[in-house]
Length: 85
Ligand SMILES: [Zn+2]
Image (cartoon, rainbow, N blue to C red; front, top):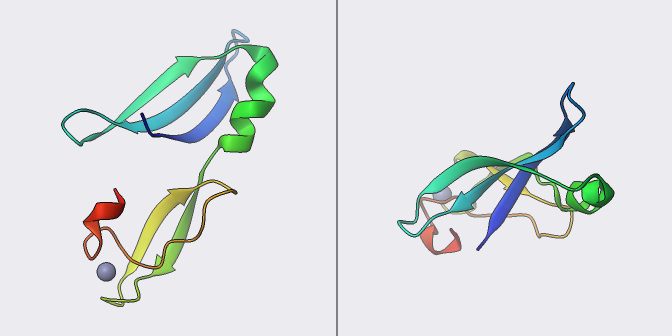
């Protein structure tokens, strides 16, 4: 299951959580949070995605997407290339 981690943070009660989007069986993005092992915080932080903005090569519109540091930039927006999602 493809997950897009958008945040890894600790609340006052010192429980680490990660917040992520995932694609469910109906191809909808759902937002969810999950308790994580404090020892694995660095691992989730590495995978964390941040919001990027780019201009679509096809329709010339600005769009936003999440990616982590290992993923390539996206040049085409979701409307022009729905298969990417
Ligand atoms: Zn486009």
